[in-house]
Amino acid sequence: MILSAMMRQGLLGLFVLCSALGAQAAEAPLLAYGARIAGDDARTRVVIDFDKKPVFFVHYVANPTRVIVDLPETSFGLKPEDLAARGLFTEIRYGAMGAGSARVVLTAKKPVEITVADVKADEEGRGFRLVLDAERVTEERFSGLLEEQQWTGTVTATKTGRVVEPPAAGEFMIAVDAGHGGIDTGAIGTETKMEEKSVTLAFAGELVETLNRETGVKAFLTREKDEFLSLPERVQIARQHGANLFISVHADTLKQRDIRGATVYTISDKASDHLAANLAVRENLSDEIAGITLKSEPAEVADILIDLTRRETQAFSVNLARSVVSSFEGQINLINNPHRHAGFRVLQAPDVPSILLELGFLSNKQDEKLLVDPVWRKKIAGLLAGAIRNYRSGSVANGG
Image (cartoon, rainbow, N blue to C red; front, side):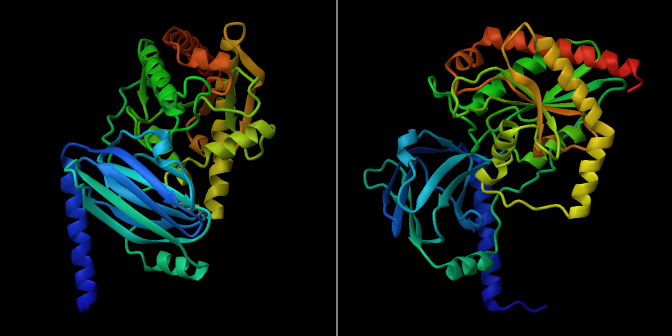
């Protein structure tokens, strides 16, 4: 096949960009130390200050309309008000997207186009600033921008390169999944302003240490630092490690700030109640928040997965949930009806019993104090270890 001059030039540019991104990622992380945004519903300018010249790439995602800015590894030293959404944008998120990469996601009210995307040296020699000018465009123009794109970003929805050590013979493997991470901060504490991604990682680390003191148990983290993992990737990591259990840890917020206590969720194609349904919807938006385009499985595959989950694994997941609730009762606060169920995507491993544990609610002052308390975290980890011990004993007794 003979490539046109324009295609050869485009491919060469893409190669240069990939090489530059890779080279910059190998260096010390960029520092984003300042930002500002101004504009209205017709035009909006976003400026981000960096200590070094950033290599970046801009692309678009639909449903909802989003502008994605991919960067090499970046430390964001920004105040929340620096990039408070305004003008054309309803929400702006930024953070890590995995090893060597970061992302800014700008969610727009209406179709937009980035008409200026440029890096300029700071006049006072303090680094460089990335300037993005956005303008409102028609639906037809935005559709054209989507079709013209030849790049899908520097981050894939499911990474497969993680090195996995096979479990030792007879080892009971437990995947502990710290919810959210990187660009997806999760909920924000009412009083402390603590981010859910930090709360879950701190507890997950404590739980892994506690579980690894159990005879015959090997626990591991799906994420070991502040990085983004897609929901399918979390499931994939658990399965690659041959996990016997999957525990996803969360600490959400509710509008009703008087509600508090732990909740244990299992998967179901029908939610047990409105609270469970709403929580599943929010948690399932994690990939969308990070700007990842969701790829739906064929209907027959989805049906098979749900059927397998129900037949092969659901009973074990329910047994684990009941064991956790029993261990917590009388020891910590539990929500009313503490075992609930809904369609959580992160619980869809067809062959791994899985639960989602809401430790408490960052929207409740009392829960929030406990969630950031190391002593309380240690207590909960011990109770969970006991619940898993009881679950294993029951599984062996029943031939599982």
